[in-house]
Image (cartoon, one colour):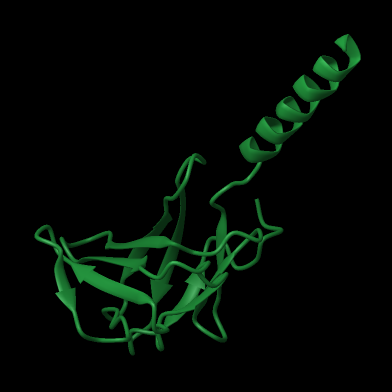
Length: 139
């Protein structure tokens, strides 16, 4: 009986330890303009903030099934809704239009893990052309 309790505690400890290592890290693929999860968790919520103005967006998954692990900013899939501004006005668009020559912060915040931020930069057409995190191996 004592061994069963030890095994039960060991299993609980391992599950808790495993849940601590599920981060919210993301990267951006410049070629496809996609945000990618650096683990198997779907992207439930992303905040996009213009570092120079009050422009901000929140993209959030609203379906019951698991969210996708990639999110294309030029073709946001069904199941996500987009809000903008401090009053969280819901947009009908399926695309985020970024400003030209601008730096943005993308923040993934969901579950128990701490939030994770990356910087993205746009060119003169408002297309992402650089980031401080272009793959999941970068530190």
